[in-house]
Image (cartoon, rainbow, N blue to C red; front, side, top):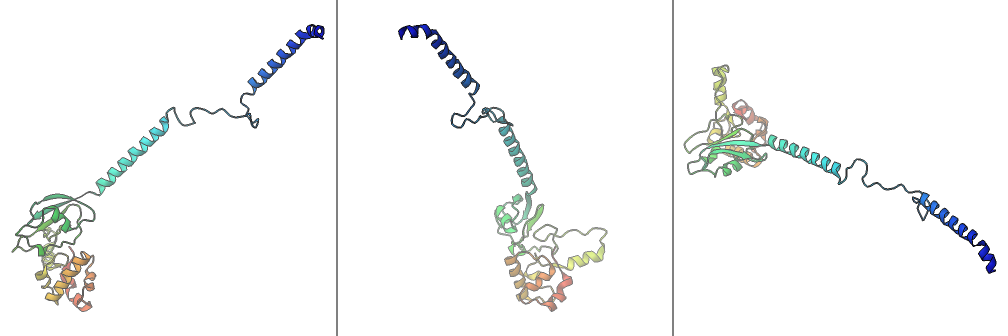
Length: 237
């Protein structure tokens, strides 16, 4: 037996070497095979398509979006800015920045409030403010004009243009602004006594300025007949 082994030992060694080489070759060629299922697996790349190492593309896109959003917000903010000129009998007259929903009352408070000479009864505190608006608070003893310069708040008269004619100026001067007129001015309207004038002031303080002349009929005590008498004598501006 020993003699037989010695005789074929080189053959056995060659066979073992051949098997070892075959196994090594097999695994070197099939290293990408999934050991569990035998299915070929695509090697994973370190960086996916559309990205640079470190996520550079995503960072750049995110930065661009942020810049666009910032510019859009800035443009919207600039478009919504409102500046109002507060004058007359207030503690600190000047130009003040307002919000879209602010009313005359808010801007007067920004200006320190009324001073001791202010005639607050001639100011429509409920009126909403607009850009380039002028709020002029008259002093006691002064009378605010019935026609206001749009978008002035306290009834500043707008000078009549040369082409409008004397008749048009007289008609405008005779009209009473129901959004800014005080008790005395409202009582100059035909059919409007102290109680109805007070009702008009109370209505606009609760509901804001009149949007159209016909809204006057929503005031208690003012019906179609009364409105017909004063329709040509009132204005909203």
